[in-house]
Image (cartoon, rainbow, N blue to C red; front, side, top):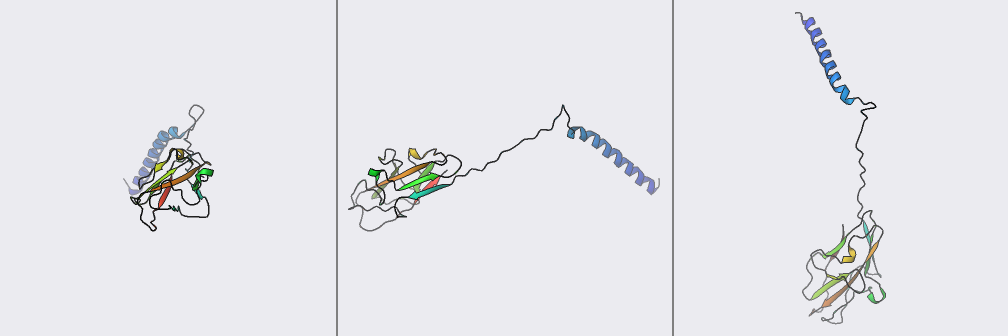
Length: 172
C-alpha cells in the first residue's frame, strides 16, 4: 500500500469516526417540542452589612467624669437618659437585618464596670468586657432601622487620673 493510499484511508477513517461521534452526541444537544432546553437561573444579590454610628453631642470619645473614685451609675458626657438622649445611635444602612454587638479591645481596669443598653432605663443592660456581647434590643435590626447605645459606669476605688479603653461596635 502506497503512502498516498494510507493517507486517504486515514482521512476516510477520520471522517467515519467524526460522523459516528456526531451522530452519537447530536441527539443529546438537540432540542425539540418534547425535549426543551432548560437552564438554572441564579440570582446572586450580595449582602450589604453597612451601618452608621451617630454620636450625640460634639464628642468623639465616651468620657465618664465621676465626682470621686466610688461613684455608681455615672453616665458618659453628652448622654442624658432622663430625656432619652443616648450616647450614640446605630443605624442599619445595609440590605439585610443585622445583629449588633460590642466589646472592649482589652480588659477594663478592675475598678470600673461598664454597662450598655438599648433603652434609657437600662432594662436590657449588659456588662461590656473584652468578650463580645449585646443588649437584646440590638438583635435582628431591620434594614433602615436604628438602635440606641446608652451607657453607665460604676466606679469602686478608682485612682485619680485618666485611663483609656477602646470599645468596638460590631454588625453582622
